Amino acid sequence: MVLRKYAFMIKASGYPPGGLRTTLPGDGFNSTIFASSDIDALVAEALAMVAEGMQLIELGGGFSDEDFARLQDAVAGAVPLGRVSFDDRNAALLKRR
Image (cartoon, rainbow, N blue to C red; front, side, top):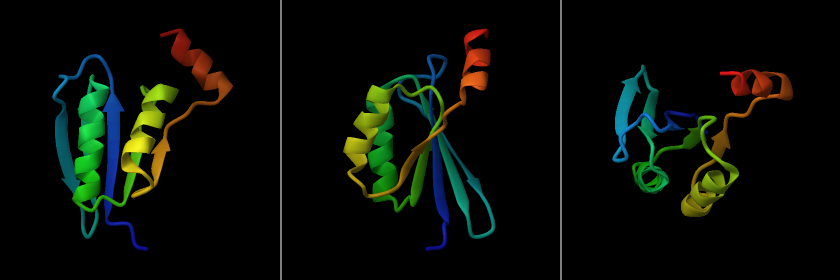
């Protein structure tokens, strides 16, 4: 399968609960970014993305294991769902911030 529709989701307290969405168009490839502080909005957006034909959704590092499981259950295998993770060394750097 040729990847043409990719999404990245961000969960952070600084974003509005209703979320912000933008699309970065490319030549035959689009990246959609959605950011929200609210997991309910992120789940709803993931379902909307699936309905729009999104082929892949990745999650930023702000998602807990519970959030990831909730999104995984919501998309129910309709698209691959990935998540950013940090090795131990870089995770320690995050804790210092």
